[in-house]
Length: 217
Image (cartoon, rainbow, N blue to C red; front, side, top):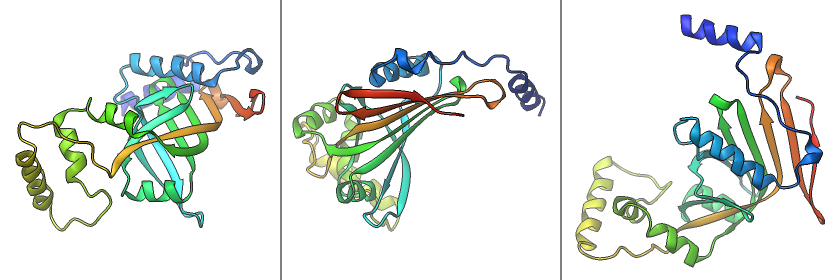
């Protein structure tokens, strides 16, 4: 309780909060800014800074959200991997509009991304898949993601069977597993500031590149 009171006192005083962002007009590359922020999140000691919420919806507009791990962020956008037979994949394939949310509370930062998804190439997927630990490769085969599971032991037996099947062999990339690239149309960088007067800068894609402006907190 004392720790919680100290944190509240610190926030209410405005002390200890990182400085805000420069003027929106001084930036023209949101992915470069994301790279800087992501590096800071990694250095902060935050557990799994690559964790990101992926929000999808059905063609009828029924939403759902879950956490995944970001694997690549470059000039194309943001890449994560999943089972193509999962609920999220079904929704993303039927309705490619998607949103991402990164939250790094120790830095009082959020990054909100809106855009569209497309599947990454099998070549890119295979390169990443074969870089994973062997147990994770087995897991991609064993899990019928989002399907009903009668009991835990059924999954464990599937893992044992696959370990025996691939013993001493390279594990091939499953047809049902791969990556999605989120191509952003809009990226918001949110920086906490004293007294809830936060900084919010928006990048929106245009025909000539990226346009930027600030939002009220």
